[in-house]
Image (cartoon, rainbow, N blue to C red; front, side, top):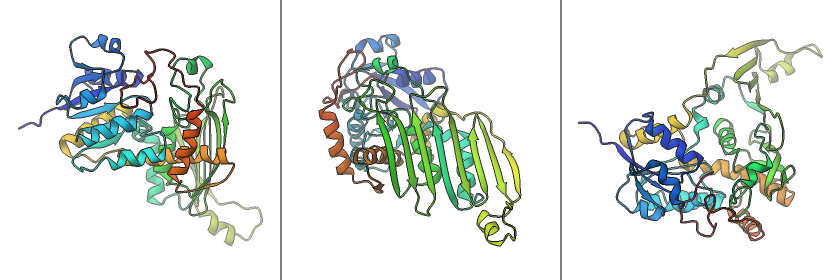
Length: 389
């Protein structure tokens, strides 16, 4: 006997919500039936006619009895409140990145996931990219040896002032909770910890509105130190054109570079530590093999993660991105901002109460505006559904 389809609802009909719906309607996801949509702006649901049940309040949808599972595609703060509501009601939940704005809210959201039969996943679609899967596999297998240095320059996030002016909630402490670290980079921060683990300390410099008229960070340079002594640098901005996306990982057995869709491994035949201790000459270097690691495409991305969520509900499939792991990328972003705010090196784990208190100060002085009702809702009304734009 075939298993029933998962009855799915989507909350938030901005770019991502409508994109996921399009994938479902195109038949790209198996075992799911979209039955309900929700947005605080009724006209956003007009395009779907009478195909789905329509709600303007997330709480009403979650209590309707119409859905088994929900996708939360709303601005950041409401990921926490709507997510807690869904999990408390026993509804399978897939939340957009970041899972929350700050570590304390992550802890509150994760604490609501008390039933192991309820599937709780996060939309970290970059985990489906074969480039990062292969780098992670090499590191986990020990083939690169102990890591010594990690550098990621991810500056091809260029955004115009018009982009920031397009939504009242965007690029404000009260509406979004941060800038490039909370909007563009959650995926890279997730991959950073997924591949290399969490650092032991962070020292960061975050420029507030360096390139744009915004109240949050749009330029970041962070220095990381790992428990084994390895160091890292993470550089990102939305103000640099044409920008760069280059990941460089160094270990005992050479250097791996991921750039422009390629993975190159300059592999030391002899480990660098052994060679520097045993070589009888002053300027010799280890013999290397230049390896081009084959990789094809960028993986299934959002389709893969949504299908995995459905398969976990129906068949118990292992999640690619358990939502509980989403706290790590949020903590990294919080550490970078808190380090810059306090002009100190932040030791991990981050004190969630200290960062939350600082964020509340920033929110109190925020210039968040409800510029256009179609694009924003008051941050105080976090139980409502929002449009993700």
